[in-house]
Image 1 (cartoon, rainbow, N blue to C red):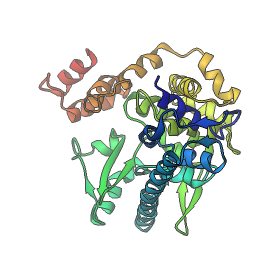
Image 2: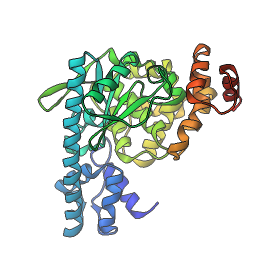
Image 3: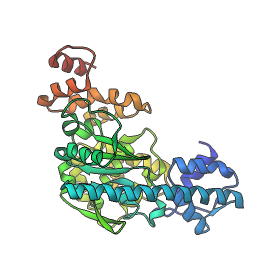
Image 4: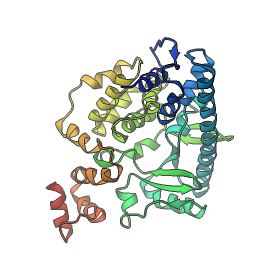
Length: 350
């Protein structure tokens, strides 16, 4: 691990429950820390550390950090405006939705909104509404980045649809993760409790804190092989938030067959953050997990974004109910097998 990465992890731990970082000196790495902080999406935490006197460095380094943070905040505010626009369009169309991730977390669990930057708009809709949601945004000027694999795929099997409005991406989610763990989710449960986040003078619907914690863990464990520090901070911050119902958290993870997901997420947070996580999460590290769940984690662990879908396809098929497998096999377009049964057999044999 390089010096910049070590310092970034110390910065990411500022203000976390149970953390007690010493003064952090930036002179060792100089302005080379700025791209690291940007990639890890913790420029806001660094800026707060400077304000509080926890982060020290020469005038040029401190100036570079503040300038980079100001630029990121300008872009973040533009994305917030887009989140408000998307929510308003969905409200007018009668589409029930929940704002996810950065836009919601920055204004709920963060010490101050500037701590939590984000790069796009993420919004959850029901599977039955995803086609209409895409149409609403398309009519408003957004462009879909990838065509639907097959008619009906998005509503039945897709994780999300990505559209672009200007230079801002909008991800419309049906479930919180792709692959088998997405199949095992019960996404309708995420609409049972509704909270709101104030943005642009509007109350935007979002998840309750417990559901946000579930999502944060799934995003960390299944989103990337090495998650960014900002996403790891989300777990530590949310776990300490008032309103977390760990009994309901456990019940959700049991129903969603997600024990292996939480185990990986907590391990990653422990490895890179100086933070005290609650026993209710830490116990997942030591809990026994069914082999079937552990087996399903492996296909997610690739940094090859182009090969990720293909890696997940066989395990996704195995997780689907038997009645859905032929339609999924046809949609993903496997090379071998000229009929649905042949394609299913081919995929199951992989």
